[in-house]
Length: 67
Image (tube, rainbow, N blue to C red; front, side, top):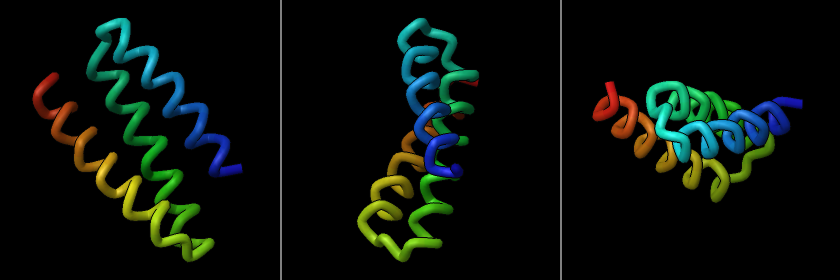
């Protein structure tokens, strides 16, 4: 279930950023990353954790610049 929340938040976040509502889009992206990081930890999937860890850092930078 957490994985689906992460997927939905990330997909919606991508469209929100595309429509230039940056702060809300990056917040949704961050929700998606946190969900997928949780899944990665619980399933011990290192590659998924590394990917979403870097995505999370990029989204934090984007949120900071958009604020």
